[in-house]
Length: 147
Ligand code: UDP
Ligand code: MG
Image (cartoon, rainbow, N blue to C red):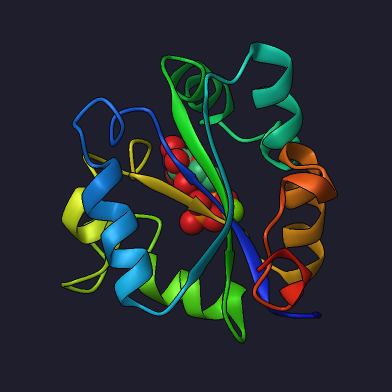
């Protein structure tokens, strides 16, 4: 269903700090359905492709090095207006500017090590979900054949 899903990554750092459980709890409490999920370590090629839009930015090399430094959790989250609702839940890219109670405010260590990724548009959510998950790995609430 259009506009109903977003991709999140619980980044290295948050995983190392044992925040997978607390972050997933915040996600569920906010009314998101977890439609797909996997623990994995991004290789260099995957990280570079995933963040290709930032390749000219001064933080790109450091970001790629961080994102490949340890395991991450990737997940497809479902809710009405998922992209917008999830960005509201995670807060500003810079945790110092994120509202109290947001995931980044609670769990980020810095602007780079900001705990989670969230897609920034419906079009990018589609691309990012396809980057990690085949159709058979998705268990959508909008597709009750799975339940
Ligand atoms: N980032 C960084 N320094 C910056 C801006 C971004 O290290 O000045 C990192 C940060 O981890 C961020 C990611 O690059 O989450 C992607 O940046 P983007 O602008 O897309 O922010 P987001 O969409 O994640 O809020
Ligand atoms: Mg972004």
